[in-house]
Length: 121
Image 1 (cartoon, rainbow, N blue to C red):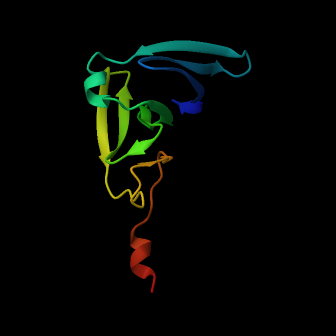
Image 2 (image 1 turned 120 degrees about the horizontal axis):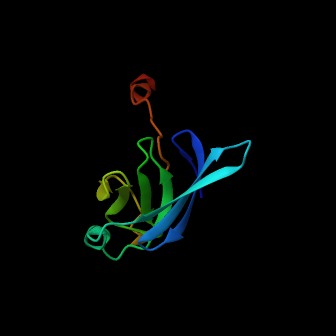
């Protein structure tokens, strides 16, 4: 998966609790740096039985993961390489039409202007 990492192209690969982030440091020279990350030991307690996929990188350079198949409640997981922490965030209001499982695709850095809803008649 390609991502924006501190203004540079980044590629993420890996699975389970270990993955690599390749960052294009110099476009003209085609120089890449490799960063290997291992999730902290407590990540299993936070993630549980979820099989995770990469969603992307946040603007604060946290690696965002979600479940391959979503179950209620739906969670996003934020891994901070700087702090070596994993945070689980529950997303409320996800309607799965009575299904026990669903495939959801989160999008990062999406902001809606909720003021627009007040102007619709």
